[in-house]
Amino acid sequence: MVRLTDITGYAEAHQMFSKQALWDLFDGDRELLNIGHECVDHHDPERMAISIALADGGYEQIKFGELRDYSNRFANWLVSQGIERGDRIAIMLEPSLAFYLALYGTMKMGAVAVPLFTLFGKDSLRLRLDDCTPHLLLTSPELAADLTDGTEKVDTVIADPHFFDCLSGMSSEFATDTSADDMAMYQYTSGTTRELPEAVKHRHRAIVTVMIAALYATGVRPGDRYMCPSSPAWGHGLWHGTLAPMAMGVEIAAYSGRFDPQRLFTAIQDMEVTNMSAAATHYRMMKNAGCGPLRGSQIAKLSFTGEPIDSDTEQWVYDTFGVPVCSIYGTTEVGVVLASYPGAADFEVRPGTLGKPVPGVELDIHDPSGRTCAVDEIGEIMLKRRDDWFSVKDLGHRDKDGYWWHDGRADDVIISSGWTMSAREIEDTLLAHPDVDEAAAIAVPDDARGQIAKAFIVTTREAEDAFAAELQAFTKERLARHEYPRQVEFTNSLPKTPTGKVNRKALREREAKRMEDTT
Image (tube, rainbow, N blue to C red):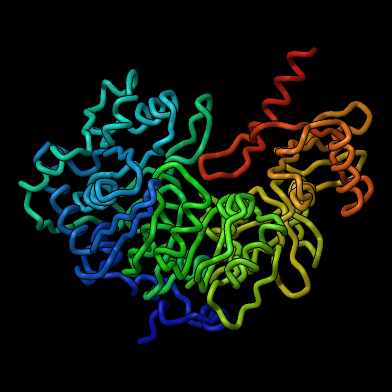
């Protein structure tokens, strides 16, 4: 029987895809399924499971057999602590043996894993703990030292030598018996302390659905050495970077500690990575840091997500690694719906595009009246679910060859004097200027034009009016004469989500408050 993991071509992927073929990749079925078992237990115990690039330059490696034993010990330890099925276990750790044994051991036992970002401030952490009410929080000695108010209601366990001594006294055998519909994990998206994002709650069956993204968006296949440098507290690092590839028995590489672009670039080479999926920001930071040339690269497949990639960075990736970087497009709510099929010999990767729909989804582009948009006509990207169309809140268009293009968030469109402008297109153009390190564009109110575009620029060049005028002229020459930032503000940094995406919402809120304070 041909398995989906044996198929690499684009056309064959669509011909052979079925929901049952996805389920056939797993030991479990629609009745009994456990993410921990699928990702850890049924792979060769002598094979390498995880390699971790440490921020200090070292590496940590974990075999499947070691992870199996430790995660089983943790599951048994949870039972000994009185933890029951459905209880939440918060895990606030960098990628490490302690993180992975807790993640998988929690789900094996039937409890609910709650990965938490290690750079959460006290308010952000407290809000999430209050929301998920975990029975215990596992964290590192360093992070525990900073925990104060808000965590006193939670039993805090330190992942130190004493913790591992406790695990050593537990049995290394544990039989999983969760249903596919049992809760497995809570995942928090990014957000401010003023507005806590609702936890996305995943059941064990979610591991089946996410394989679509693994197969067609990141192109993961058995035999890859696959790296995702994003934190496993977030969707990209957790589902695309950890769970889906490990369910295939693929060795993953992770990045631990404070991010450094040169360290990542070195690790890609040292770890002989063959397939990497990263945020667009990761590639841009490596380019801006002057990383290269390569000492030698095994890279065969590359993908990006988080936000559109600017054309200069896209070209740098190809020049540096020798392969195109493929777009992954989706949202937390709907999953991955468009991809550029890394590794598919019969799929031409078109720079700047979102690729084409993945198998098993029905997409369309609608105008405001709900009509299907014509070729090259911009409208709202829609996903069909149970006979209804669901908006993903992004604008896009299709070209004559069936490739999809991103035209900005529906709320990132700038309408000035009747002209419609794309914040993303303005940003992409500004990033092509050699003195611009980062750029973001938003709409701001204007009495005469309704809205105008304002650009925020991060640069090492002196911030002066002449440079602002130069950037405006630079944009006018490359876009329409009206399509340029009428206001330019130089700043030391841009607000980011924890996944590295520019937080335009925070910029809009900041501008609104500034206007309110001046009126």
